Image (spheres, rainbow, N blue to C red):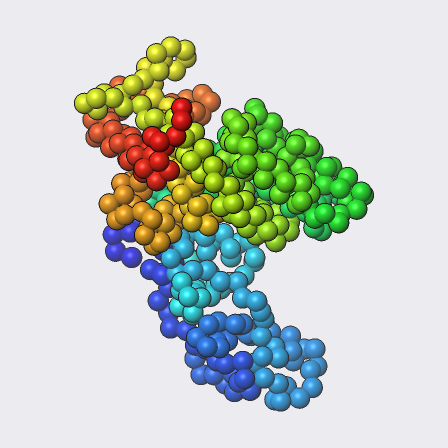
Length: 483
């Protein structure tokens, strides 16, 4: 593509490289006719489409196996009889790196591309990706997927930081870069779970799920900091299976620490009995947090509400999210109470755009990007989204949905998106600089070392945070609440 570097290529939508016409057939097609169609177009696979939506795929390998197995009366078979389903698909708006991740993880050579209505949009193959040199850091995913020991994953975890330092230099789309980090973090943890299963005989029983929380639940981590996790399991799990759950929890927390993911200082981790419950107990706990929003309850709920199943029973995520929405809507005091907590975190900017820096301690003279901006944006936007019945997803995705529902104006959407994007990008950049200098990554930035343009953008981002606080105050009539 003209004007697109080999590396920034990874951060463009799939639809921009998905140009080949798609040869399709219907499930009712005779198998012989389908084979003739494939021969006429000289293709090695054909997409099966019904009502404009892809429902299956047939490859030359499928036909070869059919013949080798000695299947009788092949000429009488229909495409429906032999097609592979369900399909592994990717949306045309997804980034190219996601296609690479899926192909590597599933060991497949082609991906069916669909639009927002799940209608067929195209096909992307590994041949389309050959133009990208394998020196790219994105091929680190193949190393992760082939790792067989925790020690190898530990090495790859350190290698990921170098990959991010490289990726930042090509100035990709910030949202795409954060999505990339989330994919790598997920891949590393899932491979770790696979290794625990294969080499230590440690696994979750059926009916249980390992949850990631907070920024990892929203898929908005910059560098991996500490662990925030939990476990949920079905009420009918046996005592033996519950013990397997606890064994898994102990091992996964320890294994993550060994590959460089620190323990949570607040002990919000799966191996803590307070964060490992049956689905009924979790529901009861959520009800308590929502109905009695004390300081501790507010903190716990804020971390838990964006929970996401990374491994195990996905239906538990759906059930839990539905319960969260129902409980929140049934408790009148919940939303204003949570909003009041969020607006306490004011952006560190005073009159005439003067930065209000830390006055003492090791971070004296610096600004806290998380406490002064990212916390209010993520929690405030999540709160409004929750009221609209939206749970899960990134802050960007929540904003888009709220805008679609006319709960965020065009102007506020642009302001909040720009504020969040700039703050999270600056946080990542400063963390990478710290790591390259042998320091611990954090959330602070010294405004005196920033370029004039960056300082101006930071002021604008903090003003965007202030815009959100005004939205919360107005929406939940916080000025009317008793102090």
